[in-house]
Image (cartoon, rainbow, N blue to C red; front, side, top):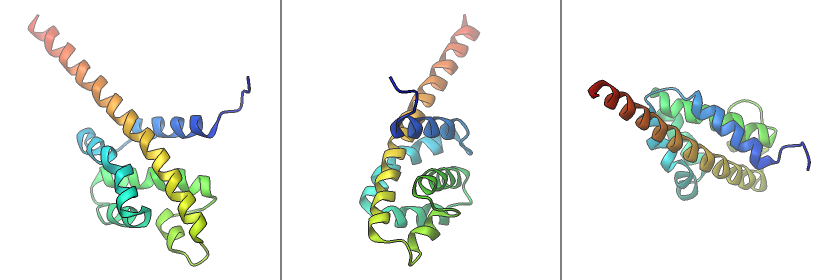
Length: 134
């Protein structure tokens, strides 16, 4: 057995850490995370990032935008803002497609972990409420 992590494990670890450090209201982040991968598939990575960037005054949009930029940018060897890298003349269509696939794979993990964290938090609230009543 190899001690080297697979790309999938690295992606999952990054998503786990990012969900734990997400800014904004948890419910808003969860709602955005639930639809993020589908948004990328339907609208395209560039269009989705542009929409999130335009909504950057809302913490959950800014948080997921920054997280996705950091992860995908790191995987693609792009420094700085992912949207700027995507629209740069030097970014070819093959790189754009690879970035899109990487974004979707990462966002699937984000959705899973955001839902799990939400479920845990709801269960904790229910336990505390039951303790107060009892």
